[in-house]
Image (cartoon, rainbow over all chains, first blue to last red; front, top):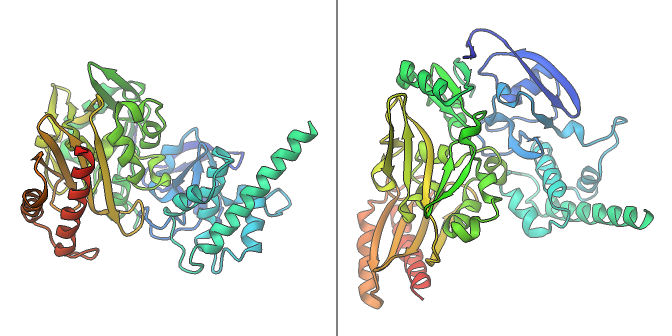
Length: 173
Length: 271
């Protein structure tokens, strides 16, 4: 039996935005604190720390999940993506991020990283996702600035743009 | 808002997990998806000495259809069951209720059995299990037993599970074409239910189960009465649930919802 003791740090390995992570942590360390404090990837924000606000949402093996309700040790072997993974290596914004910027879908930006990750997972799973699906995903997030309307608009615009891109790629082939 | 320290066991077999429960008793907690337990740990409402992670146990990761029952193992996540192709046919009520269970971001990790183990009074999965007359399969190092949902929930977050037992699976009776309906009122879709109702057609009428009002989900049988007789029966049920005022709603509002949603669902199911 592998019993990992509370006082010691234990090895954990996973991939973060495509890069291998191989570090140590105590059993009680949350994934949100692991990526922020151990790795220094502070794009993931920490709000309520009990799963209600959605600010810390990341994707685990392609599915959106609360990093504050996940222990770092639980994601051994998993593929984690955070908001840092949405822009390219030069730091240029992705399609969804650009749509947020154009549509003023953020003000203070605290909730944004989590919302982007949820929407990114939605569009990866369902290219045809429309307003109903977008609004359903947004119920898992709290935004106190925008009133959500610009977020929905940005998400729909980004979805249309991504579908157009796919169409062009298909036509090209 | 950080968990207190605990040892972490990544169980490699069911026996291993049961052995920890046998030796540590109430100092040990099983963690599966963690979507109910992690908030408790973060807020230090739970301070176990050891957590036993069972998500790597393949034998718990299965959905089985057997003799008119659907058994859902302890490591089956809510999102996985929601995506199980026969769900709508085999377990229509659950297919209606699951989209109300938390959010996509918690269903991705939360398990069916975990929600039953946690026994939140407003949770949809325990409510559905009760409405359908399902069972909970409990295993300890010593024995295996099956408890009916109506006997399992004892109080707010209190169940019949002993400290050395884990929920191995929950069993839902298959739909066999019975009519059913589900409705919920919450401040935000996916938040804790102010009132959640599930109705299932039975041989004599309708079984209506209500969550979010009493300390546990409660079911009552309604025969095929209509009009004033139904109103009176629903009113009696609403009062018997002993609703309380809280931050989210008044007791009176909850009784109103029970009467209103109850009437809608019963009418819908009896049609």
